[in-house]
Image (cartoon, rainbow, N blue to C red):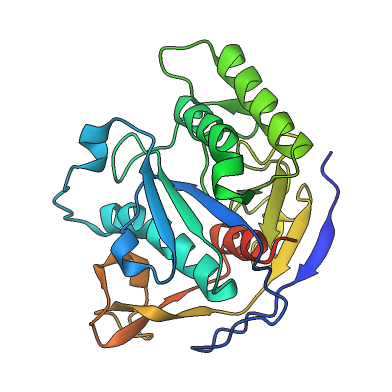
Amino acid sequence: MKKIALLIAMLIGFIGIVPAQANTGGSIVVIDANFESQLITGQVTEVCITPQVICNSTPRLRIASEFKAFNHGTMMADVIRANNPSAHLILLEAGTTKTGQVTGIQLVAALNWVSANASKFNIKTVSFSYNAGDGTRCTPSSPGVRVATTHQNIVNALASLKANGIKFYAASGNYASGDRIDYPACIADAIAVGSSDFAGSTRLSDIVVTAGVYTSAVLKSQRSALQGLHDSFPITLTDPNPVMLGNTTSVATAIAAATNR
């Protein structure tokens, strides 16, 4: 069973405020389905883990859920940057599509890339604000490959990262009940991150982040605060309203990884 440790994250949602305790040593890897790296400030390296044709694709987004999935990785990188202004961010694009899943198979590929490049990039932390399987059974999504094989590969990869001093933070999921957490947060060597705004995520988490609404100093939206759903519309650098996000377990994971708790 995961052990809860309470983390009070001093991110209170005002533009331009950055926690003084942010850790600036080493690179931070972010694994997600898609990134628009040109929207992220500072030193950024984007790497395609999924087939290159997917990374090169330009989907025609039509509905809010597609925008939300497309924007997710970019927003997680922005949260990390706000909490750690100087870290080198390495963005691993690993989705089945730019609005799709990160399967257990693709997570294995991303973790193997981290292990192979840890010394080159001085990687200290990995952030994964996604779900790559079935948290209830703690098994990965593994199309075309035995689930047990993929799971063991992930377990081995996380054990190797931990042995080499690299922390892997994974979102526990925004659940209403406390009987499960997402995959791979359920694995012992992952640091499962819950949010105080989602009580169901807290009981089985290693870290619980308390934070206010996150307001980006960089990312902009057509939507106003009253309209909400900033992540379900195009994100730019020039629209009139700042992107705002609640303290989901995705955001909580990004904060924890950025501050290296």
